Length: 190
Ligand SMILES: C[S@@+](CC[C@H](N)C(=O)[O-])C[C@H]1O[C@@H](n2cnc3c(N)ncnc32)[C@H](O)[C@@H]1O
Image (cartoon, rainbow, N blue to C red; front, side):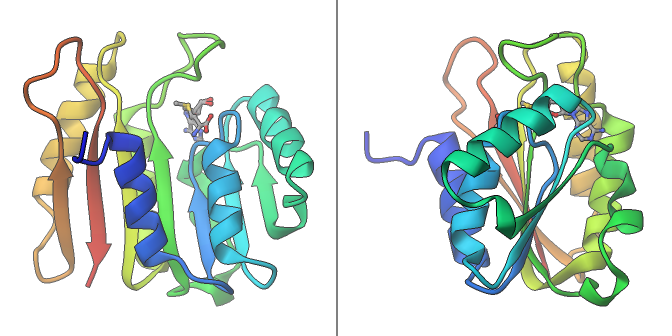
C-alpha cells in the first residue's frame, strides 16, 4: 500500500515539526511508544514532556525509554494532560514544536480508563499557548469504544471551530474501512 497508514502518517507529521533541541509533548504516554519516537526526534539537547493518569502507564513508558537509553531526554508526569500549563515551565511557552495525543484506552489495560473530550480539549487549548509557530499537534482519534464517538464528535466540533487565522486543521482518514478505524486530526499553529 502506497498511502500512509494512520500511525505512519502521525510520525511523518511529527518528523516535519520536531527537530533536535526542540520541546515536544506526549499527552498520552501509555506504553511509551510515541515518547520513544519523540525522544529520538528531540535528540540529546531537547526534551519530551509526557503525561498519563495511570501510574502503570508512566512506569511502562519509563521502562521503555530506559531500554532505549532515552529516559534523560524526558520528563514524565503521572497527571492528566489538562495540567500541561501548570507543569511545563513558563520559559518554554512558544517553544513546543510537536505534540501527540493517542486517544481512547490503553490496549491490555482497563478499557474503562479512556480519554475524555473535556480534558482533551482543555489540553489542546493549553498546548496552543505553548506551541511555536508551525508547531503541530497530532490527534489520533480512536472512536470504536464506549464514549469514543462522543469524544470524536466533540473534538471535531472544537477543531472545526478553530480560527483559520490562528491554525491550520487537517483531517486524514480512510473512509471505506470497517470497524471504526482511527483517524488523524492535525492542528498546525500559525
Ligand atoms: C491509547 S493510550 C496511549 C497509547 C500510547 N501512545 C502508547 O504508545 O502506548 C491512551 C492513554 O491515555 C491515558 N489518559 C486518559 N486520560 C488522560 C488524561 N486526562 N491525561 C493524560 N493521559 C490520559 C490513558 O491512561 C492511556 O494510557
